[in-house]
Image (cartoon, rainbow, N blue to C red):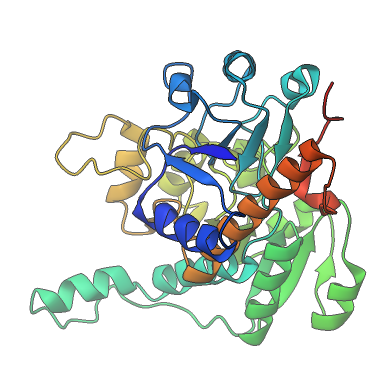
Length: 347
């Protein structure tokens, strides 16, 4: 199958080419790597392809899907878990299949969240910059023991559960919020499930691990941030729009939020994953966040480990192979959570 892989970087290409070789002669796919993001203006790059592979900031809206369908594209493969950027209704109406990578490495994202906590708490970025400048003063670098602190985990799926287990290893008290509590996890690590308002009120550190949808957009808005424990730390490795950025800036200014670690940003499209070092940053709120000594922003890199990249590529190519086999009437079994929409083929 010929697949147009959009929004690619060298690490994407390396992972996909390696996994494609692993499929063996005659079983691999023809991969067309496109650096540009998928949008109405770049659709034509998928000409002659039966599938497109997209990432978190590609625009897979109805108009894009309609153009792709007219070009002969029948499969959209997301190389990520979230699918909020895809118009699933339009895909279903067209009869276009949409698949995703439901799990690649919960450890990668969870460990990055912990890294943000440690770096913020112990002022590691500031400390490193000081000593490189010959300043070995410890003033302003005081942190706190994580041991005994209350960590709020919002969303206890695979990533949230992995994060909670790591924080339990630090000796933290864990409070969690999830519409579907994981009672086995609760019994395993002693996490207490409670309402979101209670989690906000009790957490010294709050970490977000939920998907972005209509009910979670701006989950941390002005009202929610006002309910938080004064001086608490906020960590977001989920999706940028889980947090109302304007409200977060206000909460940081007022001291209601003591620190923020953000691997994702509400308006990251067109900024993250690209080099803008020679330009003036036009996003005033992001520029302000980057100047704050108690804010640490990384460029949506929590997933970026060798293990995760390999799993993403392997799962995506396996989905393409399964789709191709289904077209031929010899389809292997595809995991239910791997499918977002898989309409009857031939419709």
